[in-house]
Image 1: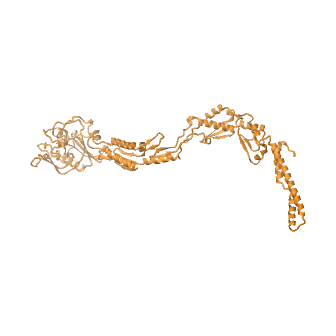
Image 2: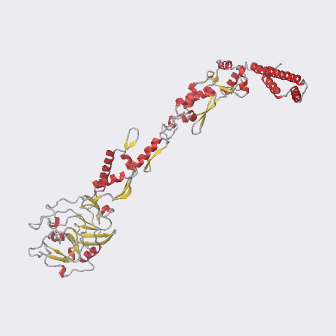
Image 3: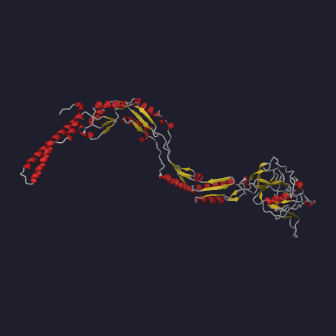
Length: 598
């Protein structure tokens, strides 16, 4: 059997294919004879079938011998062929070297190295290429290919023929400039530290009034050591693509959103901070909810939250105290927008005061029960209104310096008039302050101290009586002339503390005033209170001070009212009558505590 060495493998494969695919005619004929002999013997033949059977055996053995010789020739031929060549299916650094000699394989690898380029793929899909020529990539024979050929067993050539293949990788034969490679890689924009986003772990955060697990952020930070190592190994293996994400070169968060511990922590924190208390305060609503409650929890060095009862209760007390400090105005200076003057400071037993003890107890219970509600705090004192610093839009304003009264109803001026207040002595002056109506009565009789015989030292009938500060009140004073109201009459001949009014104005005020209207009394100018006009004064009468104040108010208004209080508008409905302006002065005795001051 002669073969052309250049086409040896091809000729062997054709021989084997032709032989295995053609039938043997002689064998078919002998098979038919054998079947006839068997049929003859079954019906009493003469034994000639034994002779035929022997012939068949010889033919079968001959065929098998030919087949064996043929197969042996093919097997030997392939063994001889692959003795100096790489087995079929041999891949060296991803280069097909099937049937190649060592020299041919090295030439093929050298050609592939010279054309080599590595495509780097980043996690965002962007790509960059490293060309072999840029890093002086070259193949340098070092005996590795020859050694690889020697390690192959040519007698196992059939493994490659029937689909078995092997991919061999080696490093010794690949050389490149590592410094240039490092420069090219580090110069890529994705490799710049400024362009790398740090990864962050999933964590429990407070978002929109609730704790929730915030997912991790992968970021884009690369492990440069892993990147360089992966690039070098890929180049040395001959691979032409490298996904840095698949390589695992990105630095990933250590805790992810599917962490069961984080979910359990968020649920627990939401339970602790589920309450929402909307406080209705004078300055507007104030909400206590999870956004504040989260800060009352204790956080350890690992960022884990927990509830410390002592610290929690302390936060409750501090919260209520801070709210009280911002809200409390009772018995303190209050801002009031005085008619014609603007903002002044007034003081009185009026305003807001939170009962801190009661509020702490209620808030503690509500937080424990995860209550959601809207309510006022527990007040010890509560002003009539939340608007206008607690004065609202309906109130009575009395300037004791200007001797003038303004009554506002629903924000509009309803009544204005001059007045005469108490004479500036310790037993008769009209104290400033913020009050409310005690009651009103029409008609009424103002009486002085009661004598032993059951009668009173004096009696002054009035039609409209409106007390607001003990025995001090607003009332009509028909014994005064209209020229006295709104002047300095109070300094020399004032009342016993009451606010004397023209009858028509007293009536108008009487019809408007009720207990929902604050009564603000103030001195807009510096004042002093002189000594008592009596040698002996009941200690409880008028609740007057035992020592006259000498200090001026905190703020002395310098502006004048829009309407001159010294010349009040004349009463258009009622003119003074002789009986309303008695020749005798009004009673000067101080009323008993249970009776009003004139």
